[in-house]
Each structure stands twice: as C-alpha cells, then as structure tokens.
Image (cartoon, rainbow, N blue to C red; front, side, top):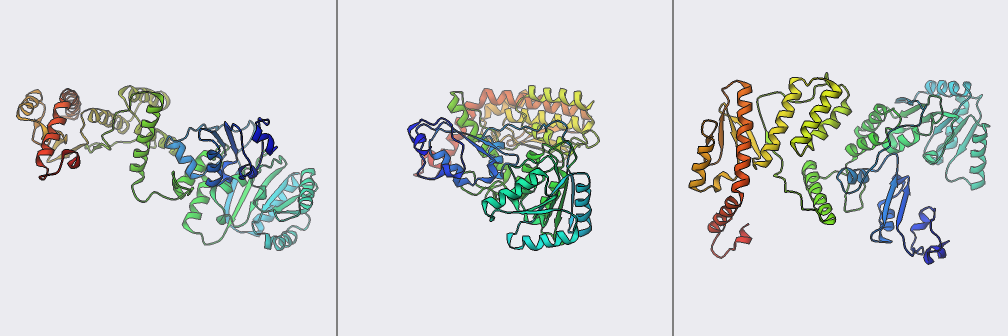
Length: 478
C-alpha cells in the first residue's frame, strides 16, 4: 500500500496515524479527510498539510477543538454545521452530581430491567478491577465485563463481542468507548469523576447512549469540591442536552479554554496580549484582504475601528421579546456584523416577521446601528452627550482650512454648531426631532467627507510633515 501511494497506483487510502509517518509518501495528494478531528494533535494535522502546500483538508467532528472552531469563526477556515439529529432520537436525560451509590444502583437496575445495557466509565486502568468488585457488590445480579486499552487484543475483542450479543449487562470501561461505537441497546451511561474529563470528551461519551428510539440516560458523578473550570464544563454539558448540540458544546469549550494560537501549536489558551475583540477584528480584516486579493476583487474599505455611540435611550433585545438566550446572542452577533442599510432593513423585516412588532428597546437598537453606518461613512468614531448636547467627534475637523470650515458651518447652519474639534447638536427638542436631526447631520457629514476627503487627507499629511523635527522625513513621522 505504501509503495502504491508513492507511485500513485492507490487512489484512496484509509488509515490511522500511520499515514503521517515519514516513510509514507504521496505522488499527488489532493484531499485529506480527518475524521474525529478532536483526537488529532496540531502536529499531526500540520504534517498532513506539509505533504502538499495546496492540499484541501476536510475535518469531521461533533466537537471541534477551540483552535479549529475559532479559525472557522474568524473566517480562516470554512465551516458547515449539521444540527438536525437522526429522526426519532430523543434528548438524553442528564444527571450531574457527587457520587451516590444508591443512584448508580437504581440507574443500572432500571436499564437492565427494561432489557437494555449500561456503559460504566472509570478512566484509571490500575484501579478498574477494584471498581468492578464494588459494582458487583452493589448490583450482584448483573453480568459485568471489563474493557480497556491495555488488554490483549483477543481479550478485548471477546468482551466487545459478548456485549454486542447481549451476554453482558454492564461494560466497565475507560474512554476507549468514547467514539466509533454504536450499540443501540446501550441506553444508560455512568461516568465516575466526570470533573477530570474535558467538555468534548464528556459530550462524546454521552453520545454513546440513546442511539436507538429509546431515551438515553447519562449520569456524571464528580468530586464534592469542584474547581471553577470543571464546574463550568459540567454546567455547559447540563445545559446542552439536545441532540445535535455539539457545536454549542464546542462554543462553550472555546469560551472556557480560549482559542489557542492560530499560528502556533497550542490548541487552546486565551489571547492575553491584546483584547479578544481587537484581535478578532484585526484577524477578520486580514482574512478579508487576502480573500479579495486571491479572487481578484477590489480590497475592502478599511474600517474606522470601533464606533462608540452613547445616547440617552435604552437599547437591546428584551428577554420578553426573544426568550431563548442562545437565539438572542445569535441575533446580536448578526446585528454586530451589519454592513449596509439594506442588510439592516432586511433584518428588521425578519425580526418583525418572526417575533412580532419591535419593542422600543429594539427600535432604539436598530436606530443606533443606523447611526453607526452613517458615522462610519462620515469617519466619526464617537457620538456622545456632553453638557446636555449631542456631540460628534470627527477627527478630520482639525485639518480643515478656513474656507472649508466656513463652508461646513454654512451647510449645517440651523442644525448644528461646528467647532474646531467637535460638532454640537441640540438635545432639548422632543426625541423624534433630535433623532431626525442627528440622522440628517450625519448624512450631510458623510457626503461632505466623501467630497473633501482627498484635500483633507493631503492637508493633514502636510501639517504633520511641517511639525516634524528637523531631519525627520514625512514617512518616518507618519
């Protein structure tokens, strides 16, 4: 097979990590499909990519690692989500709490009495046999088998065949059962010391039960004292009991562990050097520019950065308007990514179609987003209230010459007062009046900026060069 890959005789090869070893070569590798991606390290995946610089990589996983998920959310990688579970599968009932022998006994007996089987997970090989003794004392009437990765191959195969045939009621195992198994008759899972497992591991383990038409039950026992991160993991698992929730679990994992290094080998960890929002914005801009260059499209306009608007009105999507927290967060994310008036209007129509007439807070939120779009066009990063008046802060005002300053004052006469660094608007009128006036002034300033931008920018550069110390060139000053 290895020689066939090197010569190009083999078209498709299915293998384990063995395919990543140095003695395995490919004549013309074009596509790599990585199943159960969360079980591979970065070094493994980078080795695959080095086999050919332009290899296409498709990764499949129910719970992507934080680094992979963040690369998708940031636009570095494409992502497709399948959230629809198989028909007739029911959500798994999940119990989380300190170890309780009585709860474990009742869970095992209930499953066995309805003709089902049980997975019992204990992830320490050295103590797994003592746990088997404890289970047999707890429920002496059941048939128990043991499975772990250090068993001889024929012994492990024999135990799994017995479990498949229904000759065992309980399979006591390590995380060897985490993925790749499908036992429709196994519908109860018990995990000891769940606080020692990762969130994705726990989700994968829970997915081993309830794979038929019967409801599955999952019991996660933990230590009485929990570390904060372990508590967060278990809470996230409890809150995501529905089928097809792997993406939600992965988002929780991203929040808890961080995104790691996109250009390094760490698959988790928080970005401490810069703020998360700033890092995301910088990365998204870089990705957008690279995609435009590769597609031969014009480069996207440079954003003005975060636009701050502080107005005396409540904004938001109230919980009594959209009750589901996750849906509300998704809509906030969509609103934050609005790029045009048309997109904003489409989302406005969608909100009213799905949830009914917008409450005042939501109307105010859309109004503020409309202002942000106008402020972006006018290159105004801050709008706030000072001394009972609305204040706009265009950074280019200071670069206007005397003629431009007089012309701008004349255009905004009766609507706003133009200072050397700010534009002041009255707030004493009724709300509908000042809101309409603010929109009109921003629209006028946006048009003004577009018409006078080349002159203002060149004047600003000239002033900067003039103020530079003797011997320092313009490019160095800039």
